[in-house]
Image: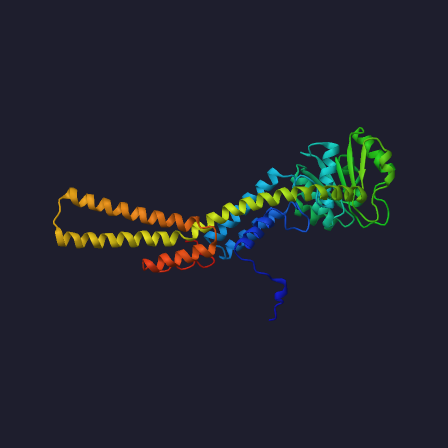
Length: 351
């Protein structure tokens, strides 16, 4: 089976670490600040763990990446604005209605744009979702998928009367909501504010509904303006986010470098303890027997010397700024003390 390797790439060390952090923080997305990336990132990590292709170090990197992502979203404005047409429906609805908690939503049309809009609105508190479609079966399938109810297109009247937000994205060649419909809806609602979002091409909602009191109509032009305006804000936020990533990557890199030498430090300490025991045994045979106090004093002295030597070498190994230097000194320690070179942990191991 042939494979096109032009679609694959390989990143190593610092470049790989920075890449993982950028992906989790949505700086590597086609749309900077894309809100779904964290969920996708977690899902990919979960699948990798299930397949046994992560280990202690990779899991640590992934967990740190999520922490960095959270910091980026808390300390910058990168996630504060709409990044797509469906998501901008949330921003515009909030401008009119404020908190969307428990608001009623009617989706006219069961396509991808409606699904995304429903997802974002529900994520922001809307809980009553009604799907209206010309084909009832399709509306039912969509309603089950998002946890809403399904209604046939010709039975839409009563449901529109109780909607706080109407999102229309049908393929009808004519208006599905005309000015007279909006007047009837508002009469039933007592002219309370209602948001109508028309993301269909051609338009689903008569532009004349804007003159009906309480109706706030937004079409594709309005939504695109929101996304374009927010793009500049996200670019500014991305600069601040990159500084956070650089700082976090630098600190985490030092931690990873320190972790890499732990097996060698443990082996060194064991080797020094072994040498001290051998020398003490030889000393006891040659000059002993010693009193209990003398024996304890010699054991304490050798333990102190072992700790000083191992501690000094551990600091040197952990504090080296470059991996190449660390590798060279680690190899030297292994050779000088005749340590068995620790094996690299294979992907998927956790020890």
